[in-house]
Image (cartoon, rainbow, N blue to C red; front, side, top):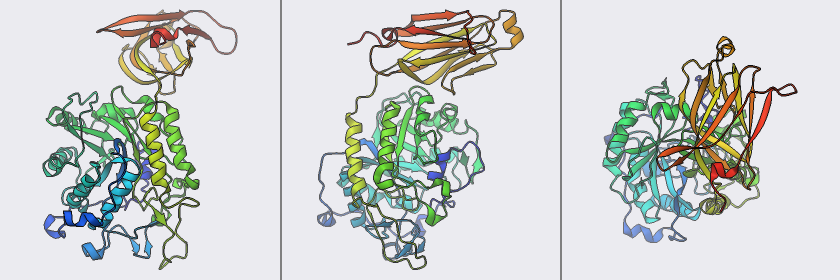
Length: 520
């Protein structure tokens, strides 16, 4: 069960609360688990019909195959409380507390996923021989029946390490890679450049390994470099939204599991990810974990569907195209993030607090909302963007470069900085350079060169930059476009003056075509 953990590691982002486990899952030997039946042609006649167009794998959903019942598995699992009436969720599933060993349940799930336009599930996986692993054969068979693919969400099971991550991925390939429902992608990243088919893996709680031991930002690098060099390789995405984790360990990208009302950053982390890495936006309908002791600050009401709509709109408003969107979640009932149909449940055996429902919405409303928004996503025309090289040089003790209008800049990649520079930063939304005052007084120059993506804001207006600096020296800016294999100067400006007023600033215009080329 995914209870909220107050993690005493400052680098875990606010959205870590969305998906942290309540306890370490352990690997159980296969001999101790009941057999998992596989789908047979005779059962398919009782399943919901396969209807509608083939869904896109660019629309995914996090999926939790960890629910089990005495009828099918000999035990209640992940329906803590007093099931079937009183379960560890603020909501009650339309199917009741179910088992992942029940083919009819899985068939209904994948029929609903197809109805929602979801072509890929990201299945929670807690290690070899865990029930989330042994449930996969049946899941894969039924997913294939409904035309849906499966990728993997590798969780922090007891004993997970960088070395075990490599073994896990090799095991998953050996066990499931030949199944037609296994998801393979030929897409690349800056760290995985080969276009051969490779699996897709998400790593939750990247900041810890083994038994909740904190790790450094480069901890996974050797393992990932080895995986990337292999055939078939792998695309591995971190849950950490700090770009230092992506570049430090050579993750192929970063995913946002979900956005809480208390989260002020939302999807803006995508602006700082390294170029040519994946950005995956998690779209959640709300967050409600009172039944599992969730902190009050995490509560994010659904507001009659308005929260879900807001998450989609916020993702579009950012203007950065994600490699895929991932609905958070299809069926994580403990945290109340599910889009699976929910209804007011039976009377609780212990508590008198009623189950929540989807307010004025139909139980299947979130399936329909997902389908509608996924169609918008797949047909959306994203703003044009282009990558430039920007050289910023100053002889002042400090100087800042702002982009005021005409475009937005994002995803910086530092190429080089002067050795004696005291500051080279873009985290505040502007480029800042600094050097010791005594060096500036002697006319010393420092510079930073970076590649940076400019995103169009529409119209033919020029880009407006502002240089701000101390009272010493001068500042220069040069913009380069890639022409063939060479970077050629597109425009430049400099400033050594003094302005009236409290801030020493000057504005400069760069023609739109210098950055984006001639308008069509």
